[in-house]
Amino acid sequence: MRRPVFVSLRTKLIAGTLLIVAVLMAAVTAVVEHRQRTTIIEEVHRRGNALAEGLAGVSVGALLLYNFTALEQNVVRFDLETDVVSAMILDRFGQVIAHSRAPSAVGSTPSDVVSLRALSEAPLFQETAGPHGEPLYDIAVPILVEGARWGTVRIALSRQRMDAEISRTRRELAGVAVVALVLGSLATAVVARRISRPVRQLADGVAAIARGELEQRIEPRRSDELGRLALAFNEMAAQLRQQRADLEVADAALRQRFAELSDLKSYTDHILRSLVSGLVTLDLDGRVVTVNPAAELLTGCTATALAGRPANEAFHYAPELLDVLHETLRTRVGVSQVSLVLPRRDRPPVPIEVITTPLRGAEGQALGVMAILRDLTPVRQLEEQLRRSDRLAALGTLAAGLAHEIKNPLTSIMTFSRHVARRFDDERFRQRFQSVVPRELERINAIVDGLLRLARPARLVLAPVHLPPLIEQALELYAPQIEARRIGVRREWPVGISPIPGDAEHLYQAILNLVANALDAMEEGGGGTLTVRLRWPQESDGFGGASHDRLLLEVMDTGAGIKPEETPDVFNPFFTTKSGGTGLGLAIAHKIVEDHGGTVTFRSSPGQGTVFTVALPARAGRRADLTTVVQRRSGTQAQ
Image 1 (cartoon, rainbow, N blue to C red):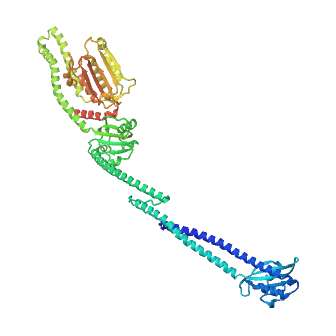
Image 2 (image 1 turned 120 degrees about the vertical axis):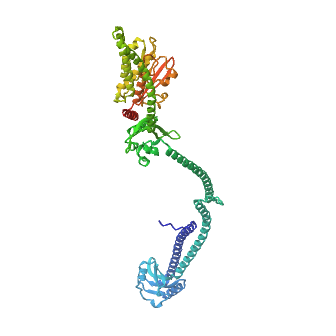
Image 3 (image 1 turned 180 degrees about the horizontal axis):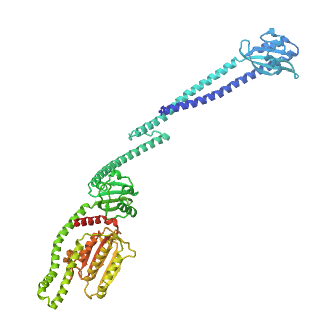
């Protein structure tokens, strides 16, 4: 686009004013010239009519008397008047009877157009030309006698003096117009200079401000609009200087803040890269925002492939992880320590622990969700090693307990076997032999069965299991003992509690052992209360907050409680505080719950009773990694 040609304001003012003055002067000149010309022409017409009427008046008597000499004298006298070129008198038949310049024309009858019109339309004022082409006015006035036309007077007036006067008037008007234009130009130049100078100063100041030179000031020397404009310019420049100072301060603060944010981002990025646990963040639309290197390693996907994609697409192969993320997005409540198995595309699945938390801004507004993925493979390996060490350590304890438990019945059997040959005929001996030996053998068999249950690999048949019916079966089995010992039973669980994944037979055995342990803890005939409760975890339970990821089974008695020094050995095989017990019930219950991916804990107050709490996974996906460990351990033992 072509840049417009710069024309200064002063030039525009001068040109505009000159144009206006020129137009006005042209109009004034035209009007004045027209009026002057009209006035001069009218004056010539009046004079010509006066001369013609005067000649006609003085010629009436001579015409009536046919005094042609007097008529000649009259036309000669009038011919002497200024601007009169010729004078003639015609009779009523149109013949020339007197002529001031051409006596030879006397007696002739002019037949030109001007003459014919003068005879027919007198009085008449006509423009014509002389013999040499000079412009003339031909004035014809009738000579009337008692209303009858006796003749015609014609006077030819020269237009040279009139045209000269008109030309002179025109020249004077042109001179006046030129003088007016010059004076107007000078006045316009002065005014334009007085206007354009402050305007130019303003323009230069604005241009300097546009270049960033804000130290501009125009001295207001006028009290008109231009002075007010200068004051406004000075105020604007001052405000711009202040704003630039404020902007410079803000820019410095922003630069410092940006540097701090850059350092913080580098620091945060370094932390994210250094984290051993995987970290994934989603926005409120469920799109992946951040994936650190540890998360890339766990998921088997790069951050570039995951960032910006909806979580449904990015983690479509891990529905359990999606469930946790969507639940946090939906409820705006974090999920703590959820264990699951994360499938991977090209590598074996990995057990992980997921912790989610909502992301919030400085004002508390929701921003998204953050998930921390912790690889549980080392933990599972350590747990397996710990279990192996525990099994080896327990093997020595088990061997000692087994030797102790089997030694007593074996001693009785060996004593009887030594005397059987010598005292076989003794009826009383045979009766005691038949009573003691089978009983001791049954005792040995029970010990072996319990040991097999502890050592045999778990073969769980998982299916949805309702715990209330299993509890009722266990209580029904011990109903005679409960009634005989006058023990009260309390059942506490929600109506319609959902089933959990598990093996019904093994869970029934665990519940049976826990109920039996609670009944044995209460004194004979002392009454007491047995409470069996099912509930979901609460914040105070230490399972990562209130959720439905685990179901808690509590078996509570009002017995004597467990002594503090005995608590480490509660779940050890062959540990018992009652006479005739094998010490395998709680150990078997502990193993069954552990095989289901759960935990067994207890709290006890001496003299007040004991509460055993069993935490079982309520969802199959939350215990898949633990089941994998159980199967791996079983396979190891099977070997």
